[in-house]
Length: 143
Image 1 (cartoon, one colour):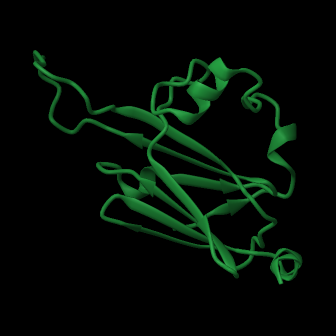
Image 2 (tube, rainbow, N blue to C red):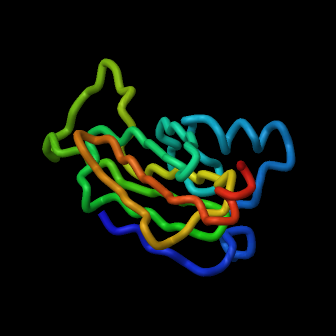
C-alpha cells in the first residue's frame, strides 16, 4: 500500500484541525466519537517504537484496501478511510446499530523524526500496519 509523503509540517496546513487546546477538544480528538469538525470517526490505533522504527497499527475492519489513504508529514501521520455498507439499498429497520459507516480518520503525532524513504505499509484482514524508520539523528539520540 503506498504512503504519500509531503515535505512540510502538518501544523501549517490550512483547513485542518489544530491540536486540542481544551479538555473538551481533547476528548473529541482522542475518542471514537465523530469529530465535530469533520464528522469522521477515529478507529482504534496502537503506536509503539523500537530502536530503529515507529510502528502504527490501525483497526479498520470492513474497509477495502483501496479506500485507505495514508499521508506522512514531517511530524504527523494522517490515516483516513471510508467504510461502506454493502448490504443493499432497500429500507431497513435497525434494532441495534453500532457499526459506523462513512469516514474514518486518525491523526498520529510522531514521537521522533522519521525517514520517508523505507516506509512500509501492510493491510491484512482489516488491520493496517505502518513501519516508519527513524532518522539516523533520532536513533543516535537514544544511544
